[in-house]
Length: 160
Image 1: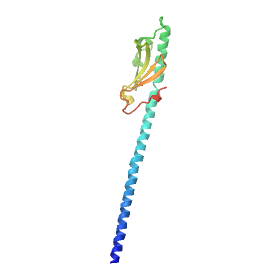
Image 2: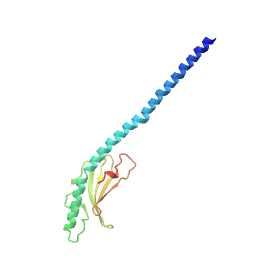
Image 3: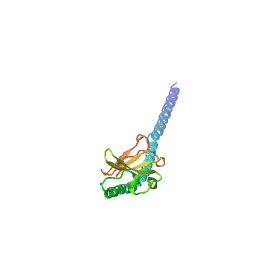
Image 4: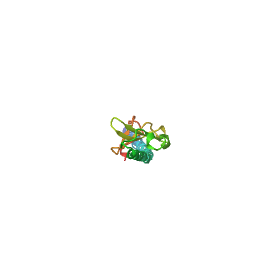
């Protein structure tokens, strides 16, 4: 009788060990899903952000060109006013400044007497209708993103 009890005890220990090994394997697999895959996704997101930031940096020379043209037009104006429209900047058509990712424009707000140069993103940028605005009077940038919660996100710290 004692032999049968010893055999059963050994089988119980083996089955307990097997259950613990299975639990450990499942734990390790879960660890991979919890740590490794999100880390990979984070790396992909950072790569995409770097590409978007690089594409955004290409707009600043164009915005500077529009700003300089507006300041020059103001200096040449007999009343010292900023031009009312893009056509008065002497840069040709706004479509001449277009890139594959952005369209550019100029706006003069009569109510606030605020001239602004802006870049508006196209779908090719990865997100449509993101507006980067340069206030010529205040010499400051601002960002208008109608779908700010959606990826890809454009960060304010990317602005000069």
